[in-house]
Image (cartoon, rainbow, N blue to C red; front, side):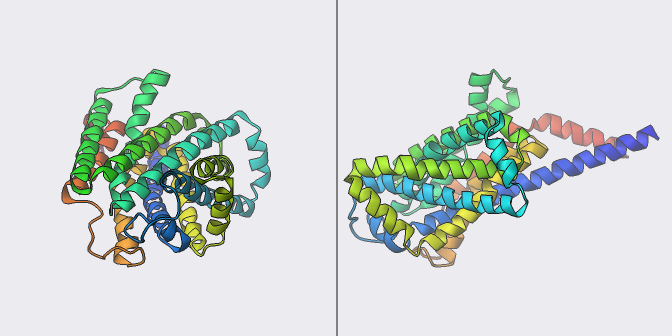
Length: 372
């Protein structure tokens, strides 16, 4: 009797973990789609003329500083705020608006606000700067695997900040990720020039910010419903990016009048429809990450989410190339062969950080023998 109950519990636990893995994998897919539609949005309407230094237009009417940093803050803020609005709509639908208001005043809620401050104004803006720079060089997908280093960086930061033990398989996984990133970055610089190096640098800064966010979020995400957590994160991040970071960066680049005119032009441009789609995918990209982490563990959840090292370039190729709506040819390669291999090697390194391969194989062999 007791043995039968133990078997049922084990099966139930496996199904629970498998469901968490499915959420985490789905978050990586949604992250790739969010990246593709965000990149597409910045090729449409007024954005095409603003980013005139890219292959889609002539000269930009904005200063180089505004094109590089102010537009990144504006795009990140619009995307995150729309994502937050989608998340709030989900909370209203599920009758969680009251719980959300109560959660904001708790310690886990404040941790989520801190995560938003780290992952939004810093990491997301750096990510969009990297995307725009790589787009100007003709290949936006190349920086995505570099940003996927957040898992490896989070592991290193966990060791430094929280004295977490680094097992041999984690060290091997981190080194694998760094080597893969070096291959991707090196080949990018060789084929695309200094713009690729600039983009890879900011992609690395984004990975650092998201890795730090992952360390801090471990506490809050275990105690907050994932739908409430993502609403807090995205609304806070979008508000900080649009209300603080964008005005500051736009004013530095062109003055206060320039900041207000850019904001009005962006909010009234048809490209907002594409931002609505990117924000829609950004919502599950983060909320499924939180949900998956709480079900299958942070390490395995981050590993499955880290598969966007592949999904990001893939969906950029589909949306901007194959569908022919982003100004690129259908046969353009989002990554070279060496870079595709590097992205896959990085995914293997991420899984090596999350799971001890030797222990996993031993456990599988033991489970198989017990079953027989």
